[in-house]
Image 1: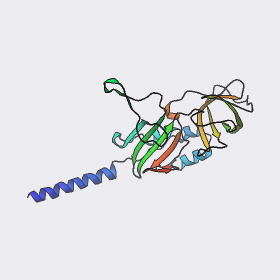
Image 2: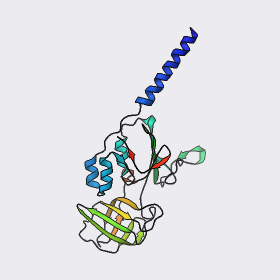
Image 3: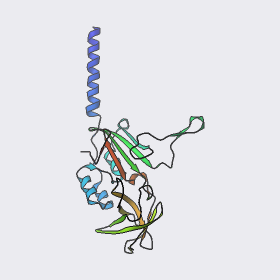
Image 4: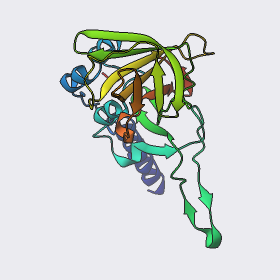
Amino acid sequence: MKHYKIIFACIILVQSFVHITCTSVPFADEPDITSFRNQVGNTSLLDSLMKGKLTPGMPYYIAEEIFEEWPENLKKTKIPVASLGSKQELEETEGWGRIYSDPDIRIFMDEYETKKGKLKIWYQFPDFYRLDVSGGDSLFVFLDDTVFSSPVSALRKARVLSIKDSFPQIPRSKNLYSEIHYTDHPWRKISYWYTLNILSDGKTFMLKDLNYKIYPIELLELNDEPVTSFSWR
């Protein structure tokens, strides 16, 4: 009788394992493509989104929308880390063992258990110093069906740069989708910006405050291997 009880218990454990591994990972949600199209001028990013692929350069809120229904036991979000690719959560301790996260940390990682394995996403607060912008790189500004471009002439501050040409026709006080194309960077060809504003001189741009939802996604890993995209469908 004891032998049968052990067999029965093993069957229950196997059934439970199959149920967890096969059914507990939900299907991903579809992000708001219309909102994305209105905000992002890059056609290759839009094409990737239409094909069900999450890629670097997309704003982080797309990942939030895709994994919105993920249960808490299958995801960890907004983990502060030291650098892109780092997997160690940054924590500091004060007296009496108090643990806190440094508010100046601007690089975060998400982990999701998916049907294809463990997905990691890194995203960070962008500024011109952090993203290695320099004179000679080119700024591209997307406005409706027009793209304005000019070489970067100087960095004024971490969030302010000037370009060589003047574009007075670009409206002020408007969050502009922009890209910076690098002339000489060891691994980055383009950086993506969602809240640039043009100032009154028509050639100076300032990065406005933004929350983590529109931090650009910088890096993806699936099962600890770097990938250029993740297909959620």
